[in-house]
Amino acid sequence: MKKRIKMIGMIVLLLFIVFAGIFFKEKNEIDRLKNVQVMHVKDGCYIGEAKTLLIKAKVEVTILNEKITSIQLLEHDHGLGQNAETIIEEMMKENTWDVDTISGATLSSEVIKHAVNQALQKGAK
Image (cartoon, rainbow, N blue to C red):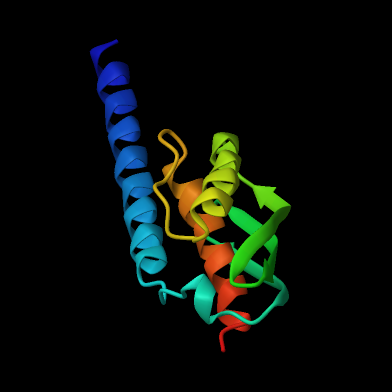
């Protein structure tokens, strides 16, 4: 019985290490985003995509007169991060992709932010 518990503990520890490594690798990639200001984006609609090993987002961002007028979440494979979708409201309110992440859905929030930022980069003046 003690061997079984020890084996389960080792498996749990190994899984934790693997998932922590994946999380930090993906977080570092997302942290290297080029900061695009909305005031430097031409009017129009732009598609942006971002993905990690576990999460994917595709958005359509509409800019009019240096304002984000719409962000449509076209696709979001999120695992447990569905709450991250509320970040769109904050980005529109603040008129920037660079807002705080949603607690409990950090990586999904970062992926959505990255997708919006990528869309804005396509319209950069």
